[in-house]
Image 1 (spheres, rainbow over the protein chains, first blue to last red):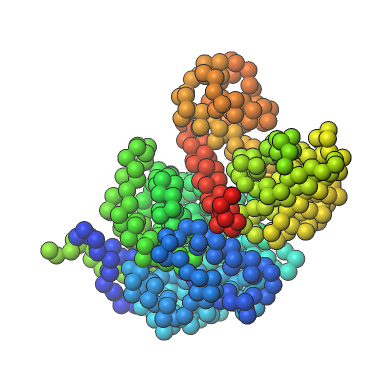
Image 2 (cartoon, each protein chain N blue to C red):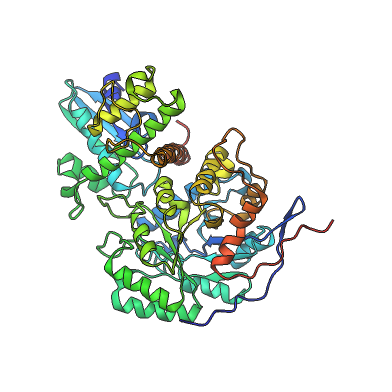
Length: 341
Length: 206
């Protein structure tokens, strides 16, 4: 077990509204390169176009980018979108390698780490692993963990690898990697359930494997990205039984604009099934930008006619926007007392 | 586009969304000329799960092939990363396993989503007409018809005296399972809304 890591100096909370302060941790961001020059094949092109349709479909008109802007963001733009105008205090990179689709990878730990090292007070870098890499991958995980002081990893079970059709957390080699994570103090396991890029007869979104490993590794925290969407109901069902399973709101957040009643149902269901302490905010930058998500969330209320749901109070919003993720990553949080008049 | 062909395609549902592909906007071309049916399907994204896509293409093929006025069938999926394999597999009646070696068959997957569709239809009915103890006590409605057809698909008891609150395995429901049925409905309805939106983004208003 490594000694606890220094999480950097305490920073002032930025977003204030109606006399309240909010410390915002964006739990899921990217620094990707999807330019045509980096696309390895039609899958890479299809992948970024799919993301771009998500962006176009769920963003407010004023926040819509051109496809060229969407391909890659500069360092300046990221700092601007997240921290200058985006109300974010700390952001966590979630790498997504996809090396079969993109020549240099879509978004690797090294790409993210280069930016994080220049701005250590702003970014946290997560790593990644793939159980299909076997013994050599275990060594690489250890090197990666030491190089970047990892506290978390992002896993993408749908990733194509040669002839393989994706993998499950319950695969024997996956257990080896999870054991190694525990030894290395990499306790935050972010899981992305996505459609497999090769046809499978089973449901690629199925979260049953999370249930099993969450029980087997009570010392790890399993953050299911996109709160299990499109299987919100399965996610809620397993998460309510496993205290170390969390729901990340990436991709769910932007419905707050385009379909606020659906967003209210998502948040309401999560509050009902897993409670206010295990829900975490994320923009999924650069699919969406955080400014409007944060502002709309702080102003949001579950409609009065949805009486089966608990109230989305200011305290709950503070937990979801930042305090819950800060606890998982030992991020120091400044006092969030009411703003002096 | 002939009405009979459209009606035949209307029997094909998206297994995840439990709605006809014709309502979802997934049918972009459908025409019968001199006994030859030409059908094109499209989906909200390039990476929509290929197993569900296969089921829709295969079901569309079977539905059109069963029409008395049709002698030859050409059903094709477009703008999808696995379109070539799916179309060739369906046309050759190879089955999913034949089209994708090591793919297995899709019966279990289909069953999983038939169960979800049933749970969602139960919650929809409860919102519409409230809980009763038996089927016979439920006032007739399209929601009741939807529930009974999904029960029948699963081989569950559809008799008038059968309990209304049966789970997807035919057991009486606990309050927690009943609450889960609500989550299933919200999830399916939410996904359907997102898929419709993405289809509009991809292809424009139709």
